[in-house]
Image (cartoon, rainbow, N blue to C red; front, side, top):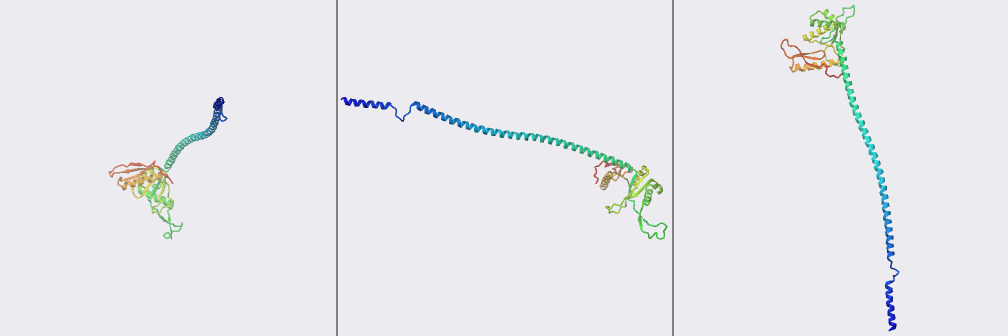
Length: 298
């Protein structure tokens, strides 16, 4: 009984000791807490480093974007300034263009006024000069001085100034019902117009005659207008007025062809006077004044 009890007791004690003593592979609570704390610190360090790296990268990217934004902003500011400057320059060019147009119009207006003044002065200077159209040219025997035997066989010559003066005086005397001598005394000088190489018609060259007294030139002009003998006497005028008188004559021709008027003539400087009735004593009235019509001279 004694030995069995001792063995049993010893085995029991050994079992108790096995339950309470730690093995080599087990850890204490303190060790576990330390391991967890170390892991937590390690994780925190990793997370912190990761955040810092990301933050540094984001900061670098933000700095780059800010630099690009500043560059773009600078370009935009320069473009805006350039746009404002271009706008100012364009406005100035518009104003300069308007001013130039105004100056050009004023210059053209002044030039036209000056041309009209010159034209009017020229017309006044030519007030005593008439142009006779429709007086036939004549040929004369060319006879040498002191020889009359062969006069009939001598070649014909064109009329000279004296011949023209004689021919004009004869036409004036017939129209004015006066003597040739008196008609010749009215004219200071006269001559035929120079031949026109571009004219291929058969009408005689006009005669240009400068009168001594403008009253005689006016009387002669009215007499030829009323005579209707195929010879026309008009006052010589400047080139611009000549163009305007041609315009008035064309209008007169059109009115007569369309039976709108009975007769008409061009009064000085370029006034179209018409008579639209056959009633005796009816007076001429102005149909249109071409004196200020714009014309272009080549």
